[in-house]
Image (cartoon, rainbow, N blue to C red; front, side):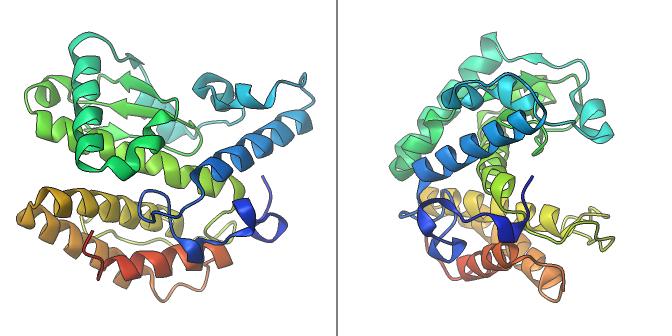
Length: 255
């Protein structure tokens, strides 16, 4: 994949104009097209037959371009496509989110492959499996629609920031620096810490609109903790630094 200095963000804009889901003027459609062009270029570098640009929006086609890390293989093992009650629950969650946040409606047109995993985690996604969401603890989540909604929105937010990262990485390559997230999770890279802050910001926006002050406060503290933890890093790319600054500003946003 290209380095940060080799590619411009869609529409000639930078992340100083905002982040997906968090900024009303973010060029969502242009970002998608930029990602598809990058996926097509990457496919051609691997000497494979040329495919139509729009075919790279298929989660299964996109997944062929990457080699998932061992962690991903372990977490996704045994997963099957969501169906039945889980799929119905996801549809209700999506409808509820879009009703409360109509400005996010277009984001949900993105093709996403939701997988049910026989695992104890609530949700999992990674850049190396584009447009894939893995949900675990299925019985628990089916019994709690609010939990399922947050798990789904959490992972869905990740997918959109992964789109940005496909064309513009957030940190210098081969950096050994790691961080401990506010949750206590250790060994996270700078990019993973930015990802965590972004998800907290997206969920915070949702709960502000829902007027759930207790959840908003928890997420604000988590977001602030992520920002404080990584602010002194010397390994931001220009795009990563812009993402960081946008997320720091979210601490004063009222949704």
